[in-house]
Length: 182
View (cartoon, rainbow, N blue to C red):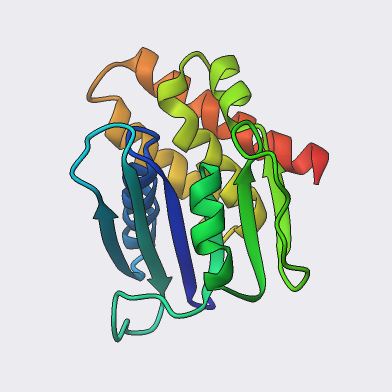
């Protein structure tokens, strides 16, 4: 497995940090080395939030990413701030529900996913991060979907079966959108 270095960024309340944790839990379930480095402002909702996730079968020397293999932008300020952090050939996944501009770089692969609309279809805006996780998994595929679905089940069945099923649907909608439209 190649080392996956992902920057996730958006507004607080969009589930950016939770998505990073889910990715790390999935990596740990596969006995991979993981790093999760969160960064957020003092605001709970509406402020900025981002995290850097590294998943690797090698030792991770430092949690700070220099040259992301993927950037996941939940809002336009995040795309503006982190687009330049992607290495050449990286995937940049954009929430096209909130971001109207296109990725400016031509040396990366840009993917536009209507995350908010798909979250509404899944049943709640609270699962838009899981929609994005489904899209990310379909695009990058470093950790198998079954592993991620098991992590989601472990996390959300504690709340209720309804919450788990909604998040499972959200993941599958993000994944399906990419497979059918990219």
